[in-house]
Image 1: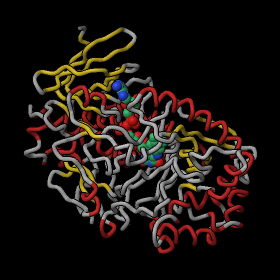
Image 2 (image 1 turned 90 degrees about the horizontal axis):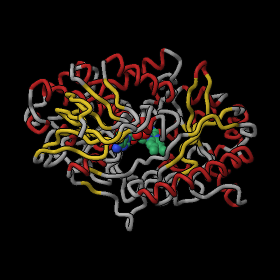
Image 3 (image 1 turned 120 degrees about the vertical axis):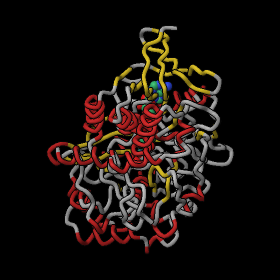
Image 4 (image 1 turned 90 degrees about the vertical axis):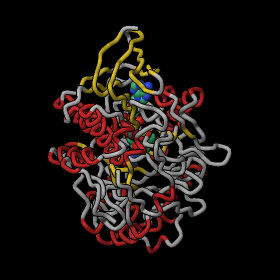
Length: 495
Ligand SMILES: Cc1cc2nc3c(=O)[nH]c(=O)nc-3n(C[C@H](O)[C@H](O)[C@H](O)COP(=O)(O)OP(=O)(O)OC[C@H]3O[C@@H](n4cnc5c(N)ncnc54)[C@H](O)[C@@H]3O)c2cc1C
């Protein structure tokens, strides 16, 4: 088979985590290649997922900063150019606050950062298999317009979100048991502009019960939650919706009553809601980002028949939803479609098994590990996904008031290096969505995936420099930690 090239670090997948891994590895001197099936990078961030980068979960519930590093570098660059909302005011700094950025510009920025770092690209190329010697992965088999070829690497990082290469390498994985639990629904997301935000704000002033979202009201004791209190106060305090969003009080609105009315009248499908996020555009412009309005119930994107059918159904739902938005939401009468993601992807998928596998109780106990690579504050689920396409009128799983596993005392937990190393396999690291965890552990947030990418890229570069395998590096990750700290990552000092 033709060999395309030999590299120090080969990264499969140019999504947010893969790009950050590539930047980190190349900056540490590794000859790095990114293999991406599309012509663009950014993955779910800008091609198939949240149409406004929810720059979320940078704080724990105590308001301590837990994620920085490359995430902060990208944010600052975008903010300085007017392509991101400003950081939330101090009183709103908490886990669920999101400071969105313009995802199209963020995708371009990732290209620029990789180019500057000297990363090589193999685009429009699908990784389909691995080349192994014994249990050690030595390269990746790819297919593109020139046919089938091999790419050799000292360290292979899978950042594809899908785990197909891990599977081919023989890495164990688990998937959600669909007979017991709903799959987190994949979505097609879209942007709309032309909204009269004053009219939208007046609707909430006139209907204050609608202002606190249904997913919060589904939690026991929600009235006392900081998120709910902030929102209720804001209704009095702010005279317009966009200032309220800019300050970090809220990043989304859900219009549940109007969604239910539209469903009852046969004008809306029952799988998502008419609520949306907000996304910044150049020159202070704000658009509505509909992320959970077209979503597919019980669709496994590791099954190609289901995935294909889901893509068709999601587009049907987009058309229905846009008509319902224009008909039912005050201020959206002349809203128009400006952007639709090209492919449907999912937060769910394969859960790989690493030398350490994160479990839900690591979340509740705020587990700390000596080989920490990153902090995380996200809760874990309890018997169901956070999002749902099963309850008409809402896109969230709120029906039983499930709260899941929440970090104790508003703290955060560590992600250890061993969770990046696939069990029983050498020469390989996993990052982004593929960092090892059980199905009840949430691993689907962008800033987390990006700093996990930074950690994997840094570790791969250290392996190349020292001649150690990823598993041998487990004995002492202090050099990786030092580099991460120097590059702004937060590894200690939080609850
Ligand atoms: C609808 C939706 C809404 C979301 N909302 C939010 C949100 O509000 N906030 C938030 O923080 N997160 C959100 N997320 C999650 C977030 O987008 C993901 O966690 C994050 O993008 C994962 O990054 P990744 O790099 O690990 O994977 P991906 O973004 O999936 O990137 C993987 C890349 O690999 C490529 N690839 C896959 N297979 C191959 C192959 N075999 N060969 C070559 N290339 C391959 C893909 O094309 C892609 O570019 C959402 C996700 C979805 C789907």
